[in-house]
Image (cartoon, rainbow, N blue to C red; front, top):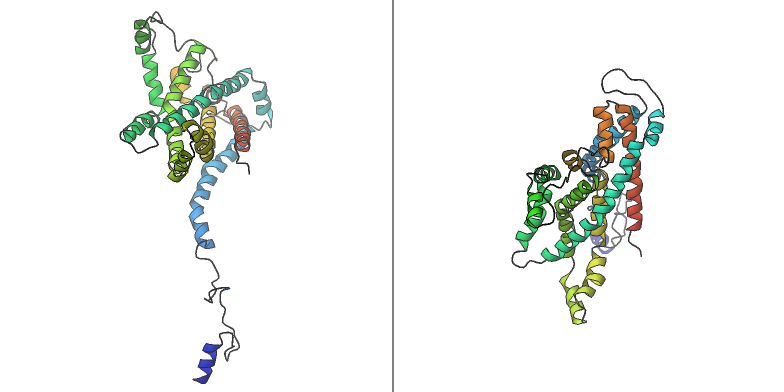
Length: 322
């Protein structure tokens, strides 16, 4: 009994076995080999599906594409190794070069309006006032429908003699009702740009609206007490606090524009000639029309490298500075 009382009074006293109880640094609780918040095995188990997904659907296709790009793979029939010949051919291909430049121009035309319109819509629907939920649904609905469906509807409505677009413009006295929207390069580009801005701004709206709703209301109340108007509040409070969401929206918009394909395939087929041929459409033609899968793989890896450089530049320009 006495030994037990002494041990209770003196926690640091060694027991008969000579072992000192291991206690935590502050609470005196026994130490554990791992932490409760970040157990190593549980963390690895949770991230393993994502890692497996990336390995199977990202890295494995890249490795296969790299292998095919070093061959004259014809899609049908035997193949032979040709080294870097496909890459040299891609760089010297005028059609592929023009498609890259056109894709960059298209990206520059659609990205700023998508961001500006998405921000304006987010400001309009970020509050919980009456009708905001209905407006969010209306603005986001075109993105849910998808570019392929919207492109097909636009194709029907832009016909020179039977389309609603020409009928409306003719009734307003703007055109004679026979404008060739889809057979003229600049007109087709302008039509596609307007359609894409309308169809994809809803996603930017949702991303920015979510970030705006995360700003504490007390910040706006303090600004109002200090006499700040709407514009100063947006400029000095909202914009800095949604910077990450703006950066994410910009990156998504740019990458999506660089990979543009369905709207051009449905509306113009890259025509007239190759005036509206994007980079992805050029790859498609080389692989499934010319049946030169090796050359197409080389062109696709060049496009991946270009997108990676542009994305890295975006992350560097949009990074948060201390």
